Image (cartoon, rainbow, N blue to C red; front, side):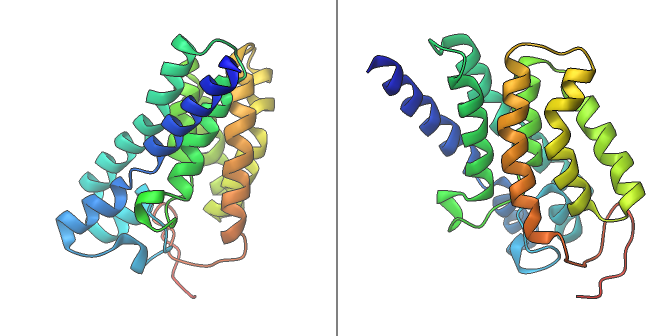
Length: 200
């Protein structure tokens, strides 16, 4: 029973942390608009850059990574069993994607997912973003590249010699990220990093 209470508590911490909609708050503060009303329609770093510029976008990225890092790090230090750690990380990503503080319309989960993995191994984020960048250049579509990257989180980490909790964190957050990005699989909009012309 005690372990279940720990699991529920850490899940709540992860979800509430992930639900903090920094992209919405910062874009509204800087530009007076809702970041979800244009571009991709999501509360993400990339869409913040589209609406408010690079510096606000960079701040959103750091804060969104922290949303995943904080609760996962806490679970690594205090959770009584290891499976609570990937559960906490996944709940932070779920909160980011479907935030209770923003009408359940949030971001795509990549930044807090990487924050969760960073809590276990800081260099993991380099592996993930290098893969994402390569796939984005190959596929010319960031959402499809993100789906594939989410699926590959755990195999990539395993191939790099990573073992232990990080593999389970990668699996948990990777499933959420891949599922979330499927919504944009066939969507076309201006890609900040590829300068794609918006057609829909």
